Image 1 (cartoon, one colour):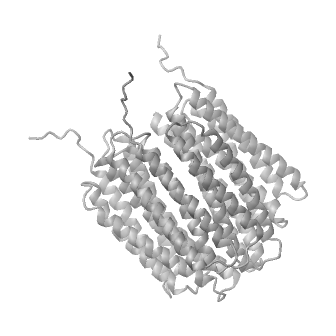
Image 2 (cartoon, chains in turn yellow, red, green):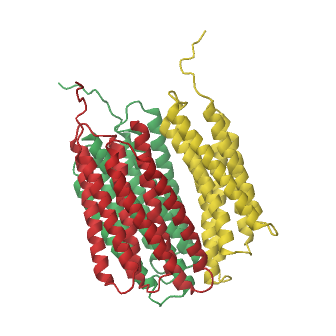
Length: 205
Length: 205
Length: 205
């Protein structure tokens, strides 16, 4: 019989899964916001709710870190991962916010492709969270995030070239560039989460 | 009688208070720069002085960390807090610099409100520094910074909407947006300082 | 006879030198890209190769950290330094990319000066890497990077003033500002590397 010397609190894994699940919801709302004919004010309201829910879960994680004697991995890594996931939500929230604020109505087609990349990032991140418990099968997640980040980068560059092609007026370029940069920021934020998970896995292995 | 096993160097608290005090000066100069009829070159010169003074204090803190055997809290946290406070100064300095550089003369009214938020952030941060010694009464500080950050965010969004309302020419939007973003960056930098203080408090409690 | 208790793996120093050497190549390609009459597509292709080579070296460092029991300095510092150097490459790569993407052909003279600053930063950084082994003679490196960062900052501010002088159209300002900001970002990234080296030296001394 092998004694369990480290009776680890499994709530952390559930909370990380919950937090990543909020990102799946956020990415869906982002796609709704870009689609034609939606009620933008209502979508923005639901985005604020999702962002608020993610904040709550992040705080629950931080609270638990402070109350728990034995954490499944380093306190600082738990903090990094939680705030990294929360950062993704903030970036997606910013995109929705900017679209509403700037009253942008014609979206270049490439932006829809970029949001698809973000939705896929959210899905694979949420799917990877339960693997934190075993630290197994995370390779697939890193490879996929890396592939998505490359695809996102290509979309981003093509979108910028399009924005500066002469088709758009300066003010319109300014507005769209802000939105486009925030979309890319969301993907970068997903990549940062994957890097944090990788660092945790390296330490724990 | 309880022996003091950890005869902690209290100079650190004084130096952090001094550093935060430079931010109060910087925020005042920012307000002067936005006001009509000031001697902008002179204000910018005094801002450079304040920024230089903050650098000096930051270096004094780093030097002391390296010379001191027992520090009041983790070396890395001292370093984070000092550089976080210094970052605020750099952001405020950048705003003053951009206003001079871009020769912007008509400031939207919302920018004045944003500078008031920044002044209040500087005051509550400076007021909180002595509490680092006891780690007490810091809740009020976090709550107020959080409230200010929310107010700043609202101002920022309203300012952006105004900038893109069609009233301004593209070049003017570009200039003002840079200034507006740096103002928001200053508030974010204050929030980061508050987060660092919170992390220190959590560790020490 | 003094026993070597810490038979440190010297490969790390070689790998850091190799990584910094890629930056020297990158800075040269940046200068080529700004010069008239070059084959831009070919320069961009060689930049991608240099960026890829830097990635490889960075990964080699990370792999070695994970396989080595006794590292010459803290694992996290090795990681910071490697990713800091890699960040410089990414910033320089971005500049080349933006020039190609935005099809910018007339470069203000100040941009050439800025690239000279970057080339000098790359050279002194590469020259400093072997000193990591002895932690000696690093003062000169920090002083020079600091001087270069100040020079770069002055160039940057003068370039912005020029961009907004009224000579350029809004779209052109937008394009050039992106390039100019990435050039400054490259210099900032070099400064971050110098700060990381300084922190390592402080710990090890």
